[in-house]
Image 1 (cartoon, rainbow, N blue to C red):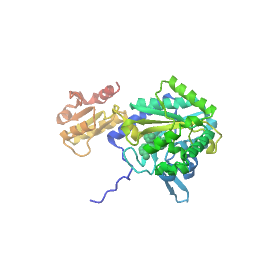
Image 2 (cartoon, rainbow, N blue to C red):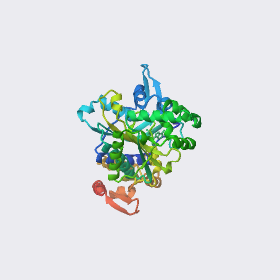
Image 3 (cartoon, helix red, strand yellow):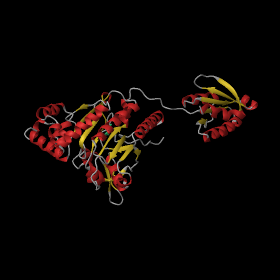
Image 4 (cartoon, helix red, strand yellow):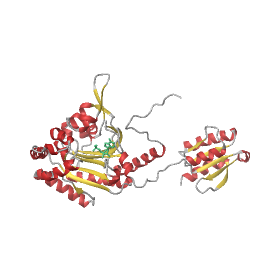
Length: 421
Ligand code: AMP
C-alpha cells in the first residue's frame, strides 16, 4: 500500500460524534448571540499581514513568533488570521457599517492559526467563538459583553469557570503603567525569567502576567497592580462596569495584574479560566479596545469584545450536551426488488426532510440491522420477501424493539406523522 499523507502537526480532523457535538454547541451559541442582538460576520481567513502587525502590535508574541505568513505569487505578504478582532474591525470599516448601522454588534465562529508548539489545549489551527461590539464607550457595554460571555458558557454547559477582570486604563494610563513598571524593574531585571527579560525590552506589561512563580512573586512585591496608574475617568469607568456586573449578578474577581498580550486593549480587560484545563487554563479572553478603529483608519470608536477557544471549551465540559444524533429511518432489505423499493422510499422521505439511509455494500440483513444501530437510527424499516409479497413494511422502534407491520401504501405518511410530532 502507498504511504498515507497525514494531517499537519497541531491540526485535527473533526468528524462524526465530535463534529456533531461542535454543531450542537455552535447552535447553542447562535441562540445566545441572537438573544443579545449580535449578527454573524464571516471574514476571510487570509488577510494582508500589515493588518495584524498594525493592530496586535509589532512586539507581541503573536506577531513576532506565531503568525503563519507567506509571500504570495503577487509578492504580497499574507497571513493566516491568528485572531479575528482585527479582521472584524477591518470589515466594519471597509463595508461602511459605521454609517449603515452605527453601533454594531457582531459575532463570529471559525478557525484561527498560530505557529505555537502544540500541546494539550494548544493547537496550530484552533477555533474561536467571539463577539465584537463596535461604536460605544459605555462601561455598561463592558459589563454586558462579560455577562454575555458568562451566559454563553452557561448555555454551552461549562460550569466552574472563573472570570477575572482588570483595567489597563486609557493609552495615557497605559504609558504611565509601562513607565512606572520600567522604573520599578530597571535595577532588578536580573531577577526576572529569560522571557520576562525580553518582555522588559519589548512588551513590558506582559511581565505582569508571567506564569513563572519567581517572576510573579517578585513583581507582586514591587508593584501593587494597574489600578494605581488609572486616571479619574478610567477609574470611574471601571467602577461603573463593576457595579453593572454586580447588578447582573455575574461572578468575577479583580486581578490587578491581568494584562492582555495584544497592544490594542485599553480600559477593561478580562479572562476566563477553568481548572480542568491544566497549564493552558485560559478558556477565553477579551476587553475594550478604544483605539483600534482609529488605528486602522476609521473615526475613533469605542469597542469591546471577547473570544472563547472552542477546543478548550469542549475540554472544560463536565457533561456532554444531548447531541441530536442519529437518522430517523434505516431501511434494511433482503433482495434486489426490496432494495429498489427502499431506495425510492428513502428518497421520498429525504425530500420531506426526514433523514434516512440504507445499505450500499450488499450487506446481510443482520449486518444492515447492526448498521442501523451504529448510525443511531430511531426506526428500522425492514423489507423482506414476506413484506414484498404482502405489500407491507415492518417498522422496528430501535429503542423499544417494538415491531409492527405497516401497509406499503400508507408507510410514507405514517413516518411523516411520527416525525411531525
Ligand atoms: P487570545 O486570542 O490569545 O486571547 O485567546 C482566546 C482564547 O482562544 C484562549 O483563551 C484559548 O481558549 C483560545 N486559544 C488561543 N490560542 C490557542 C491555541 N494555540 N490553541 C487552542 N486554543 C487557543
